[in-house]
Image 1 (cartoon, rainbow, N blue to C red):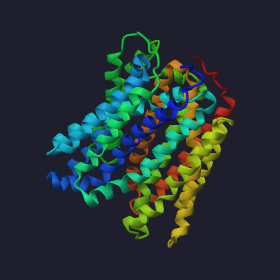
Image 2 (cartoon, rainbow, N blue to C red):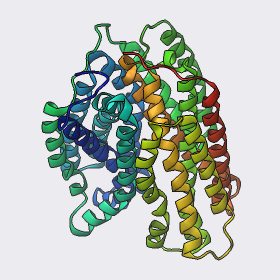
Image 3 (cartoon, helix red, strand yellow):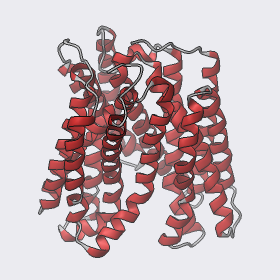
Length: 455
């Protein structure tokens, strides 16, 4: 395979189909479980608080294993990690469907999270190998669109399945799709060379402890957990993080790609991503409370009125992907994030009795801004790294997204604790501030210079 020309047609189409199917499964399963939690809790005789682990176990497993699996992809090839993740995700989906207890379901969800991490850690690296460099923005835009569509249809899919079947079918439907994607992927996905350096298992363990404890601590702080425990967790994060970073500085290809963060445009793109996803999560978590508790709307109305945001992304992301092949990601991202910030300000300043149109057009503005930013930013992250470090860049992309989302969710809880009545408005205002900061960071890329891609 010519590293510059990507895969030949029609293999390119089959390969991107496999990537799209895998990403769809991984993103959907993060969304559908939220809707099904009450049903699962009742069926398994579990408390609502305990049932939360069905969601948390999946997200935590993904977060702690993204970078280790991305590093493994650099070593053994992205195709092996991706199809391995697909296989693990498919088998564990069947285990989820057959689970008869909350403990069994949670254990299966942990394994499923590791499978999803295998898919998500190297999917963008594979897109870089599938598409020629001059069309990379289009390939990344397909990924972005798939994520947006999967996110918006997740609750709808879950509600539709639960209307005609029991909750185990939410996981059982993954099995035939996963098997089909695995079979096609074995033949269509590109084979990429790796390296023979020994795998750094110590760094992988330190990574899991660092990110796992950081997420638990931030989540506990936002939800008012016992303060001494939170302080102890944060202290452990600082200590582990110090030795983790010191170890990475001595490695030629570190698991935590500190060497890539020395590339100014890469570091700025990661910073832009963290701030933007923090802004998005501040909005997504707080908006249902604003629409239902403040404006008295139903769950159905809330879902309908929030749809313009991801729906606009579906249309804007392909266009921004094409633009990303021609114009600077710093400029496109700066414009998009400025629009997002204005949209969030508009939502935060809604009147006392807004009608559906007042809310819908503001949601659409937010979707326009986020869609314009995301594809160019993802393209910049993956193309700023040398080709043989595409796995590390792909892993950092996913880690930045999860870090921003975790921080955003914790900040929403903090806003609600500070101002319970005006918590949603405060969270939206804070989200607008994060989007504005992200816009500034994005524009700084215009003066940081561009790194020439190396083979």
